[in-house]
Amino acid sequence: MPTYDYRCPSNGQVVEVFHGMNEEVLTWGALCQLAGIAPGETDLNADVIKLATGGNVVSSQSYRTNEPPCATGKPCCGGGSCEFSG
Image (spheres, rainbow, N blue to C red):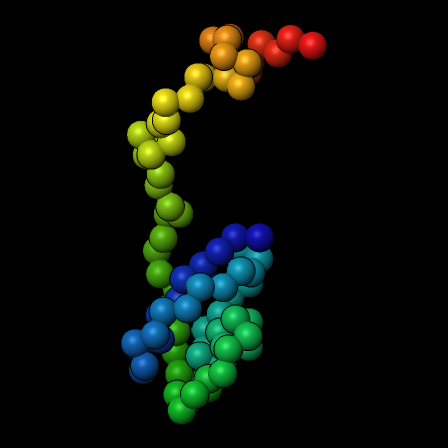
């Protein structure tokens, strides 16, 4: 299920929730119920705005280590799969 971020202009809070792509979250009360959080003193009917997020982008550089490319120490073949010996 996708993750979405919503911001409530009334209280400035940003809340992350999981829900189906076709589901709409329009109010602070609905968002709090979905997230399982207490609404606090914010009006339950206060509007929320779905933020445009494109997911997290992770650079391949952050995965670089001094380890060999495969657990066997052999180079990986085309397509990224390793040559394992039994």
